[in-house]
Image (cartoon, rainbow, N blue to C red; front, side, top):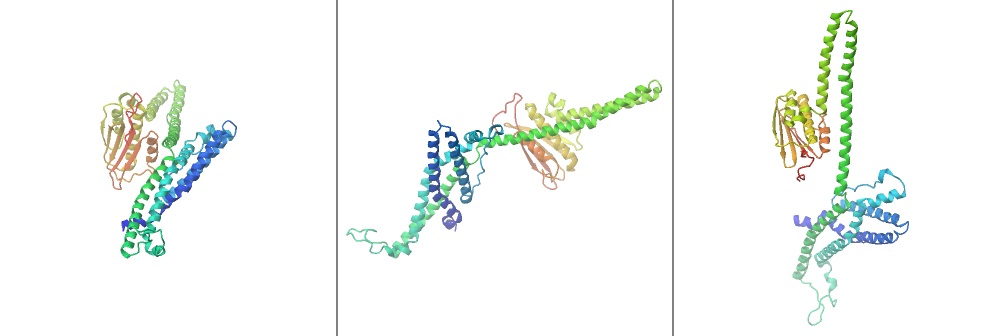
Length: 431
């Protein structure tokens, strides 16, 4: 049954049809690329050369889009579209458009596909045609061999007489050869389809550099949005907290000053109350400074800073940090605030009785794992802040993995790039 499915299955028919279409379509792409680039290149000395070359490249981009669609329908591979055309600084006009087409990497990669695909198309078309025509022709030999009777030249014996294979054994031998040819052709078709998938993915999809640039742009927007949100939070905390308290303190001290000579006892009581307000304002400012960047983290590193944060958690926390050196300050800060946010989630949402924090280094990655024995069920979609935390880690090439089945326990693992304090990354990221 597997051999039958391999030989006449829908996948084999689709991939074989793709191989047959390769040659006519590759001819169109090759002729368009060669003639278009030759003519436009010869006309570069005139003002029409560059616009004509841009038109040729734009046509080849469209040809590449058609090839991606054909590969999706017949080969079952969905290759994303390459990076779009972008003019510099959002400029408009013919020259900006021509420059965008000529600079775009996808335009030249589509051209390379049109030029390189023709030799492979000759191989794939010929292989499929020989396998199917020869195989199905031999397999259907009993239906048409009678038409070869008495036709000289079909095959010739030593006396010059025409003859055909017409006895049952000979017919069966021809049919068996046809079946074997179809099976071998199906295997060959599968292999050639893999080559076609690789060509389409490598030349007609987004390049790794373009994908990386797009990812960096997305990460930059996340960082900008996060920074803006942090600044708004700090401004709100200052305005509604310490600033409001200091304004009230100034007013109380002004009233105490007025009563100092008339009612010293009342003034002394007001000054005492103001002294308490000063302490509260200082505590709020310390908390705000700790939320920006705690001094203990800068001075002593992750261990003491997280010990201080764990002491403020409503759940008992055990900390195990295995680091022989300190990472870059930025990575330390991200690891610290990731941990404190997760500890806040544990305090508010988990119902846990105990939590553990483990931090260690693996090659060039800083690993952070927090486990609690709460009721579990933590997901990035239930308002726990995990989605924003994952985005912030992604912005620095980090990862966040969540394992929180209903009933617990919950284990959240964060992975950050290790960067030494001199700014180096300690090596390439392992894959």
